[in-house]
Length: 242
Image 1 (cartoon, rainbow, N blue to C red):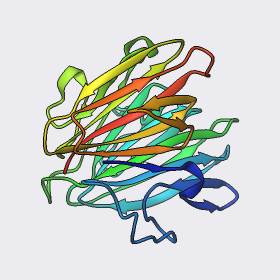
Image 2: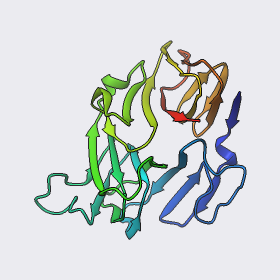
Image 3: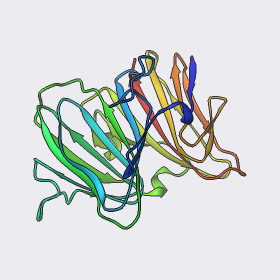
Image 4: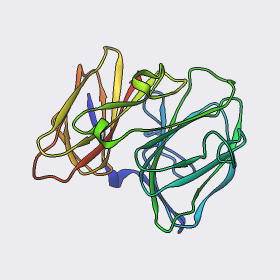
């Protein structure tokens, strides 16, 4: 089964300092037809104005993954990340993937201290362990690692040096230009969610534009194909428990 979720059909919020597009029900956007997909609960595409951000707030029992498209974001939390002298300075930039396991409770803030807008996707995945010790991780994935292929950036076992999430899910990232393509075998009983960040890309015979998504259930394989005349495509692919 293939179901397309067009960019313009997402929930939207404009707070002046923040423009946000919600793939699934979130905050004031509520749609019972879009409460998540498998254990994927949130994909918010956010545009944060310079000098603004999210003040300190709390989370618990959620795997939160942040993917920076452009600009940068400064993160500070109750675990000490982002503090002077901390092992993780908390600033994430394009190519970085940040993972925060909220566990039994964590508080954090996120700010764009730069002179340019920050464009990011924040993803929430429901964990398979509750009440764990909160933890944090961030890693950089160079464009060369993602070009013309799907590179594992987050997974339950930390394979391929990806960030490790406490959930039965994996997130792949890819960059495609020219006539590049890639495929991903889907294990029976699992499903996939494809979020096109930018560009244009054909996924299992369906054309997606920036902001579009495709849900796949009962498909044996995910197939991506880029055409030479189209702009470079950046994509996130989630392999999820059904």
